[in-house]
Structure formats: C-alpha cells, structure tokens
Image (cartoon, rainbow over all chains, first blue to last red; front, side, top):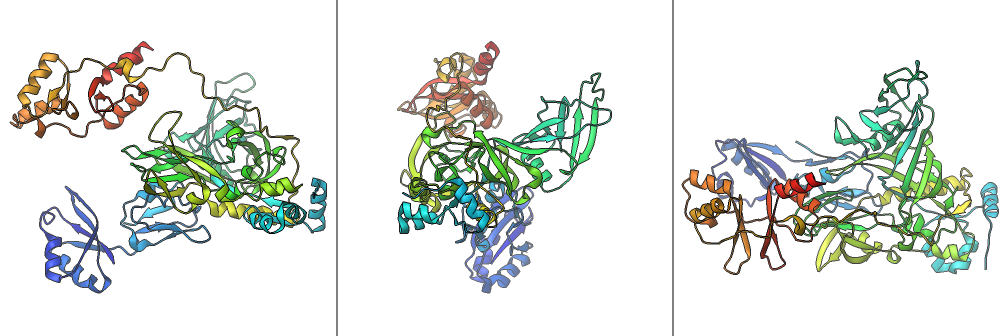
Length: 128
Length: 500
C-alpha cells in the first residue's frame, strides 16, 4: 500500500525513515521524495500487512500520513484512449487492453505527473 | 477478373444485400479467398482514424447584427478567429491560442464547445463603414444560433506519419507530445492498418467529391490536402463537413503541453471494392506499413532518420533504437479509429450512407513537396562567434581566473583540461560570489561543470533558443573532440538581429 508522508520543516532533518525501518523491522520502498523549505513529502510503498504499524510509527514522530488509494484519476468522459500517456510513465502504470482502451495499474503510480502533462485531453489528474 | 461499378454497389445498399467489412477484417478475407474472390465477396471496406489534426478549422457565419458590423477582429471565448472575409464570416483555426488562458484553451476547444452545444462568448471590433456602422459587438451564442458552421480542414488524414523520438539531453514538448531525453520514448500515429489513404494507396477511389465520415457526420473530400506528398506515401486530403451534424465524441480540443492546441478529428473513408486490385490494396496489414523514426532533438527541417519501423513493431509497445528498448505511445486513438470504421460500416449496412466515386482523383504522381524557398544565407554560429577565446586550465586558482577575465575584458571563461578538452565554465559573477564567500583557491570548486555548448554549423536561431532556455548569456563553441574553437554570446546575436 502506498501513502504520502508529510514532514514539517522541524522534523524533516531527522532520520525518520531509518528510525521507522529499525523500529518496525519493515522494508519500505521510497517511490518518490521531495524536500522543500516548507517540509518534506515522501511517497512510501509498504506491504499492506505492515501498513498500520509503519504509519503509526511515523505519526508518533510527528509526521502526517495520507493514504494513496487512488493516486491517479482518469476521467473516462475526457479520455479518447489514444495512449499518449503510456510511454512517459516511468513505472509502467499504463497499458492497452486487448480492445485498445487504456488501462491503469494504479498501485504502481508514484504521482510523478508525467502522464498528466502528456494527456492532450486533460483527462488525467493526480489526486491530492 | 471480378469487376463492379459504384452503381452496382449502391444498388446492393438499397436492397440490403451489401457486404461491408472494415480494413482490419479484409487481410484475413483476402488471405482466404484471394484478391479476386475477395473482390467478388466484399463490396466496401471501411477505414478510420482519430487523432490530432492541427491543420483544422471551421468557417462560422454569425448572421447580421443590428446595426450591422463588418468584423475586423473577432474572438470566440477569447480565441481570435480570422476575419479577412465578408462582414460576419470568420475562420477559427484549431491551433489559435486563447489570449487569456494560453495553451490551456484554443481554437480546437472552441470548435469542440460549439459541436457539444455549449455557449460561446463572442467579442468583435470593427472600424465602422457607411453600410456597417457598428464598431463593437459582444454576444453569446450556441451552434444553433449561427448560420453555417462548416468544418474545413486544409490538411487531414495523413496516409502515414513519422515516428518522433528525442536523442538530445533535455525533455522536448512537441506536437508529437512530450519526448523524453536520450530517446526515452517514441510517439506515432496509430491508424496503420485502418489508415484511410493507405488502404487505397494509388487513390483509385478517393478524391474530390468522395463522401466520407467526418467527425460523426457525412462530409466530403474537397481536394488534395496541403503538403500532399504521394511520392513518399505522405498523402493528405482537404475535407469539409457540417458541424451541426457532428458527434461531439469525435470533435475534441487538445493541448500538447509546451507546444499548443490542436483538434482531434475523426475520419472514415469507405473504399468501394470495384476490382481485385483494390481488394488487394485493402489487404494491407500493420506489418506492411513502414515509416521513419526521426530524432526531434535536432531542430532542423531535415531531422536525422534513426531507423525504419513497421506499424506492427510500433503497436507492440516497444521498439529498438540504437540497441535501446524504447517504449512507444500512439498519439491518435486506435480504439476510436476502429469505432469509426465500425460506425461507417453500420451506416452503409443500414442504407444511411452511399459511397461516391470522385469527380477527380487525388494526384498520385508529379507532385513534389518542396521545402520553403528562403532568401539569403542563414547565418550559423561560425558566422557570429568570436574565434579568439581565452580559456583557463583546470586546477588553477580563482585569482588566476579573475586576472584573465579583467585583462581580457570579457565575462565568460571556459575551463579546459590538460588535453585541451572543455571541462567547465567560469563567469565574472561566479568569481564575485567566490570572493564574497572567501573561496579563492581552486577553480574546480566554483566552476559550472555541465556546460551548454554550441556547434559551428548550428543556425544562430537554435543557438539563441538554447541561451534563452538555459537562461545563460554565452556558450563555448566546441568541435567534435570537445576542444573550444570559439564562443558565442547573446551580444553577438543581438548585433546580428540589429543588422537584419
């Protein structure tokens, strides 16, 4: 399961992720990390059995957690199934079905937004 | 050999016995029955394509206002349409951008909004005449309020199109979509086996007056498209149709990020199977159609051809470019192209659509697609750059660099290795910052290592765009061995522009 870890500037410098890995003994996959003066935002993928333990450990350290259940949203009324989005996706989220409609394996999405700007129809949106 | 006339075929539509298949179904039929057998069996093959067609637009007649106006300029939802016509006619081009929203909304979106029945705001200005005294007009209309709304696309339905990739080191935003650096992806038009013109490659049944499916309505081919290039299988058609009868599903405004707006248009052309030769032509498959992969990283008219590729390979989702597996994306919708071929087939079967033979065929020989005639020599970097350029050796100090810059009275100092290869660049500003921070020792610590460079044969216009994109004021000019042979600055380019 993926979630967004939001860290305020006060806790951003701390080794939060390393501490949580040690404490919970859980392997985490960092899909994307973005640290700015306003704080850090990291997209983390964790096995769903460990989701509650890991997110609780982050919350204990003052971080905020947003589950990423629907990281990318496709508006089917706008989508014309051209598939322009396929080749710019770095994690292989998007592909064609047998009938040439566009399908998305959203569990792989890391919200990089490459497909959003590629889509000529404005059919894709990264959820916040 | 089996032969039929268009009258025979149309009689079968009337009596309900017509046999129509799509261009996807035809290869199998020809393989089974042979071309002659297929020609006997099949009456019409339908084709389809649905993708971005920038060279699109619409003539819109607004009807007269009271008092009347001769529109000198007109905007639909803040997108300007062309008015160099009679008083209340305008031509809305698909790629015209909104004055307030830029690339987010353009002519293609206005056309979509009209077809979808949405309201569109009109603002017009005029100089005022005795017969047309009004100087200003503001109103809101839907497509039902205006007279003719005629889509007229000067170039459409490309027989095939090039594949775009980008071997440069930065992301490009093009009319073929976002092209990732280092050939990170490749984009193409998807029609292939359904391509209307490729199913009749010598245009025996396609030409002026051919009745077609145009964005959900019955439209017509009015002639060869602009840039019609049959010699290289890049033929195009000019089409027109009534927007009031179109289906909003097949008229879609589009934005290509960083490039501009366009219009997705759907075209289906029926190919009457008059004889075995035509049947054979419609048996074409994706494996039979080849096109070129071009490097859009080279912003020149003739882009390097990296390889030839078939549509079968493109549709597999991955192609090999110089030993690298590259993901492919179509820019046009094969799903909707198929839907168009099926819809047209359905219309014919129901007796709602009768194909025509052209009153004049599209030319397939003797047409030359010429490049632009340009007057005068186009200046290159070599014509403008300073050939005498001071460089500094890697490993020297900030002070050495400061001395070189002040003695030479310039701002940019390329740093070279012991082998004379460019390894960095120092500006007067870098030195000022270093001094302020008391970092006066090694030059290596403060120089910029990723140097943007120019090539002697590069046109000055592309060098100017590089300076602008990277927000820099000079670039070392290097040869193929990374040796500095000159330097080009924004000052050099300004002087050149001032002379023009």
